[in-house]
Image 1 (tube, one colour):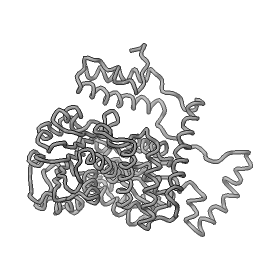
Image 2 (cartoon, rainbow, N blue to C red):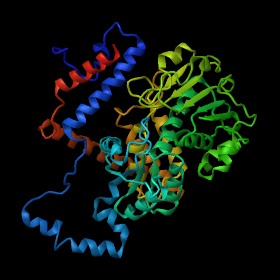
Image 3 (cartoon, one colour):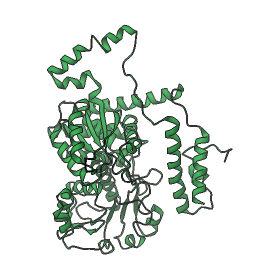
Length: 484
């Protein structure tokens, strides 16, 4: 392996040909984990803070700081909204988490979420031209239990420094209360990307998948495997977009949701799940094998696989079935296995399989659109507008069963999406600032191109070092050795 030149584009070719499809999939997963560990240690994380104003001479510090900056303070004091013009607030998002449900790894302790939160900020900047800062907070109370009120209080106190808040990796049921309270009580958008972001991109993928199989959203039978924040919100947004909840069945770890689930009704913390119990599964079907019979769509957001979703479940689905298996880092069933079982379209959360349904295609554009018009909140209508924008953009450039929505490396999708979100915010009456669709699109595109140009310039000039080949080789060898 020492003579190989490894790029992430030729990874597939470097995995031993003798490996089975499952071994190759495991090797890729382990490689990215090994590479992430080595790369984060090499770079000491992946975000930094840099000036956006020049230092023409040291006398300029009299303007950037004291005494000149006093005028900034008093101007903002007279009109707080001028903070959007006189500071970076209007393009700054706090990525807030208590790290109690980090990907599929559970409670990682507050600092354990930093890698994900920095990653979110990284994508915001490069894909959306938005500045983000990772903030991992300790939400434990005196009894050692995680208290949602601690997160709520923290965000409400710190909201005046930011244009928006991105909540992340907060375990349920706390995530429901945190989002619902902050959406109503904060004067800036509060967005829970695990829930609303996942719902947005899933709806975008579903819209185009249904076009390809010639089915209408109001007619299809949908089975949801998993009833956490992601799937609960997906169901709500998909219903708002036209799906019939009476044709849907959702499963949590204890079985099917329906109006007879007294355990959910009695635990008031799970009010979002109880709402779904009352409108889905009117026949009270109890077993997922039964629910899957004739289902048009499976949306699984449960636990990492493989073999969490069984081939025999997919085998009994309707003709031209659509399967979304989006657990990370390993989907509930590998796409090749789902296809063998008869699935027509298979999507996962990963970029190394076809049809990545991942939040990264959504939140950079959504947050950018909200920030452009200085929105006070992100409404469900704005999330649906983003989903429809992603789907429409993708359809215009061409879709097929292996390519249902745009990918991260299609930069034009983000300003397109941002502009639609901005227009919906104005329509919904939550925008502080008016602009045209073209103005929003042009500004978003300008900021995204600027962010990418800065990153390229820093790399080209050696301020950001290229990843060394030994790091990639060692990561790949470790992955191959672990799978053998």
